[in-house]
Image 1 (cartoon, helix red, strand yellow):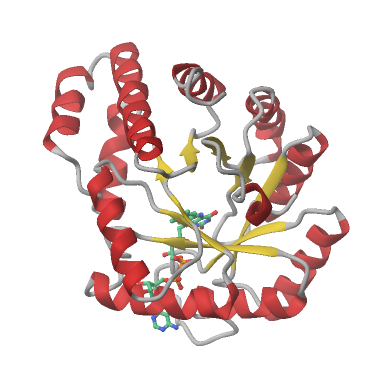
Image 2 (tube, rainbow, N blue to C red):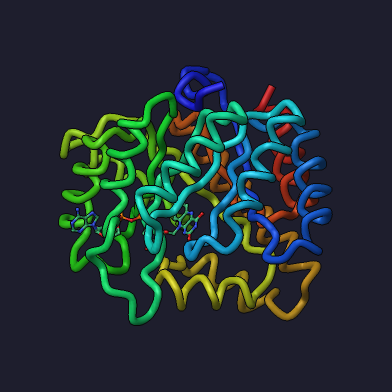
Length: 285
Ligand code: FAD
């Protein structure tokens, strides 16, 4: 099923993200996690893609597993360091397997890499996927601005170009303050971006994770959230419970404000996915 068709559903829904194994020996663990997540009937499951392409075959394999389990897969695809030929091959592979949804990404630029080969930005990939045909195409967006952009305004200008190239929907980078997302929505809508913008929510279940997130993306951490990490960061079980509760509250607020599709970065943790779904049992009917 295409994600655009799923998004026509007016009821509240949840989807989850998994990442592929780095090496073959980790494959079974990821498949087992995917099986457990699929069992709670998410709207779809997305599977990330290694920017350098090292785990790209696993992305396709995991997407196929998701499909075989009866859940709609969304396969991520990055273009940096890839040729147009590589991309066409990957798209042919996905099409042959009946995988209809692709999240078109540039990927982070590796150190020392010079832009200017086949792909420099995701809008070029979106154009190529559109020309290839048959896919529902998603793109990434950044409510606080992409780290390479000098201003949120210039990032939204580039986002408009990417959407005009053929994105059918967007998924956001994680955020911990829903007002950041609501404010972003009104800015992009004012710029004429009308495709659905699915909020991405990350349940933070350990303190190390939060240090990595803030170092890499500079995501704003509200005081209420920072107090939770300061208070419970040294107690893994307490941090996990508090992180799931915080993410649940964010999701309830999104639903209460009329958002119907929420994507959860559950980091291959079925227990986290199940807890969130359980916390919403009377809301997701
Ligand atoms: P782009 O849309 O190309 O944007 C990158 C930067 O370039 C922005 O600052 C933008 O403003 C600017 N820009 C865009 N177009 C132009 C243009 N035409 N001219 C000049 N400037 C331009 N990474 C992975 O490696 N694998 C994944 O599976 C993955 N999944 C992700 C899923 C989501 C929902 C998100 C939010 C991010 C994901 N990432 C993933 C990270 C992503 O690859 C990085 O954030 C990367 O640096 C940017 O990718 P993009 O597709 O947003 O790039």
